Length: 469
Image (cartoon, rainbow, N blue to C red; front, side):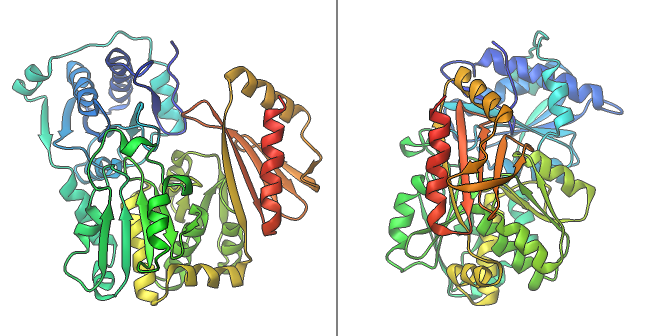
């Protein structure tokens, strides 16, 4: 069975491919990669894990393989957000990190994310190096023996993570405000962290689903509109100013406005970027993935900033952040990172930055969005995920690349973008994107238009096109 890394690490079903044996195989490949790139002695790696079933067991298996390869290992003493591992790697100048998590995937999945010494997602080159070594037989040193030989130890990853957030976010400004935020941790590693960081002020923070649950309440812990119905329902009462949701490993977020209105992550990125530019007086390029809103291009133009479009996967954004000159970068899936923190997405940090933008400017989340829309134009955005067999997926993309439609829902196609998948851009700035999921057997169909009534027709056209194969 071939193991392939997707947009962010390797993920698979625990009832199928994601087994202890395969975790050891991947860990051996990771160990050999880090040993091959270490300039002196064997590196030290951090290992963390989320709340999924058997995640700690898988993390222990990773440690057994790493230590058998003479790599010293530091294992988190509890389940933590992915970014807590990244923070620990950077703060302690380690060679890299490994996180056992399937992020926003359904509870039947688990996965492995690899972090570089700079604290961000493994680069394309690192992933290729790891995949090229997957045929090697894994070494193993029993965990008890590794501890006895001082090759592995437990450590607190959470304290440094929270200290990094305190240094970046103006928590005092949020505490002084009367903002009322409802947080949905979706039973993941976000827990009560936002609530904990804001205790003692005039603001009011309440958390839904803070309890760790390997089944995530029976759904995928992905902060999208269809999974946040309870949060949206609570926001309809208008007793709350904003709803903030974080995914299973708390590196992505979703935002619900009063009235139960879901803000797509591109809108959230624009709100935060505009705050950083106008209030914090920060400058730099804005990076967006190909599936993110065109509103970001308009924002960059308005502020005289470059906007760079990259394939889906935060590793592409992280690489540009390392090169310097990037202010903020974000994915359509809710992963956003900012300069001056880490070249890494962080749902907890971004949720707090949204609250800071509201508190400092004294405006509600919808007021901030509507102000941007008056300046930049209003965009309607939608996405559908279709489960399609691998054979049909291949046929569909082969046909689409060979003979793309000349019109999408009646709009003439003026450009075909193949940065990631196939993006059909209309003459009126509407667009339709088809791309494979990097972690599940799914074709994602995205649509956006500056004409609200057209987005559903675009999406229906796209779905019909996929189903016609």
